[in-house]
Image 1: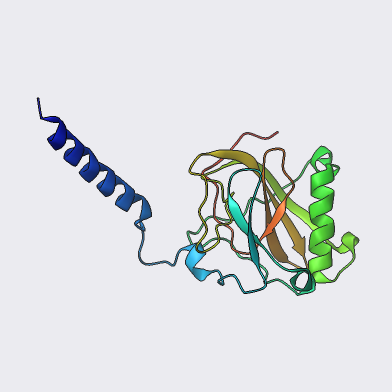
Image 2: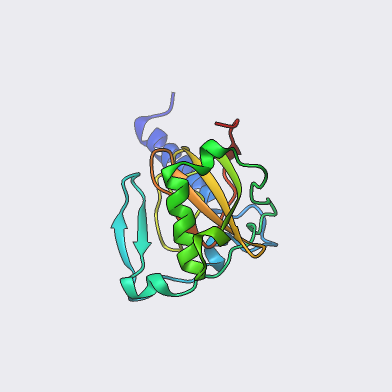
Length: 181
């Protein structure tokens, strides 16, 4: 049996290796979504969210600026598209996201189509929309991914279970897609 001091040193070394591995990229050939997202500006402020993550919120002046239209994440996974049940289309959170996207694009709500919806499990508290320099809870988060479209351009909206959808300019694929709800 190792003396206590040697056990502590061995444990510290193992933790260091494990934590270092958590931050390592698995594929150096493609940029990470966080690396391709713009850094927060002076007008953005950090605030803790209900799910334990910290996110940035744009100032009121930024809310009316057009947002870039996202594409599938660089990892190659496509956004979940396909038929969406009427029961999902009638959900208050889906209606609110549709109205938000119409405002972002400067179009009528009738011009926004719901292209897909999936119950998912997000890999962490960023709910598939990590921001550079932010820290998130490292736990699986059940939630939803909503895909909206205008004129063939798709946008991804993400939510934790029981929370409203939020627009995601640089979506990251969920840890898993769950059976239909």
